[in-house]
Length: 437
Image (cartoon, rainbow, N blue to C red):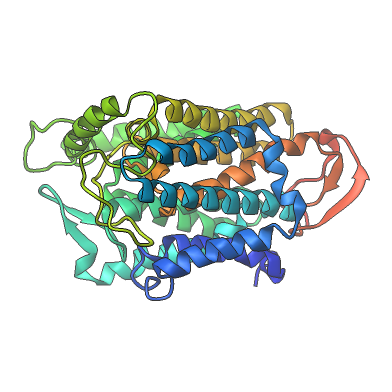
């Protein structure tokens, strides 16, 4: 067992994340039911609050913007078209943000840099099993426009692609930390290759784009020589492939850009054009204040229950959904929360001269940006119980704690997860080499 999980207090966050994705993975759904999911998140919040420092993120600018965002969602109850739905979903949003952000923040404060993303390990095992075992099941393929979309043992191909994206920060970070250990390096390299193949099979363009954004952010932490060599060999591989297989470019364009092998003249992102058009019209009706958090204008009445499944429509874009539900005010708060979180981690990246810290900061920045890119195609922000939402807020907690690290004066060793001494030292003198025993 990893030393990280020998501590009882490290399990609740990992289990809550599994609960968040349990409903979309067939072999986990009988265990992590709707009620179990919310029970785990409540338990996580109560467990995390035992350590007052878990609320340290509230003192930051990102925390202040998040509090304003939560309060605004609750306030929309007073003019909501569906008051019961709004108060339930707004309360769920508060619960998820408080529990997962606090738990992510505490995780980093307790476990340090080397194990900063280790809470994703159980999720990684479940997601990889959903991908590998799904290869033996014909129902794992969903018929697309002239092609098969691989969805593993999940509900749909986009959700499967999202799972692959969510586990990739841990894999990239562990690959980086094992550069001086050949066997571990090959293991993590093989896992990363498998994840990328699964992403391609899913044809989830949003998740593939988010993954590439994260890789691009990771590349910023590499040395100039390494970046140049990767770009050179990558360009050579692309040119070689196009020369040897002339039809490759057209196939890639049809499969991944248009996502349609039947109609060559189909529009780019044609599968999203209709939801975007409807959401655009509804966003205009949302105006400054919105129709109420969780509300889909013109979608009828909410019947109650622990889930809003069966109510509403696919909105296809986070920003349009936010304006429809919480208005332009809600969109401004969304930009402030996202922008301040990314800015904090990026500033920490620039402040540090340690290559390992910079690499982790780059991966976390890429993870945040990648999930925001996915939000251009999936309205996960307004679905507090969605797997993407649960994952994102835990990463936000890690990001805030990570951004505070350059200002700390404690020396932290990360070769042994969780080890910390209190001897004062400047940032440049901190021992944060992940290869060090």
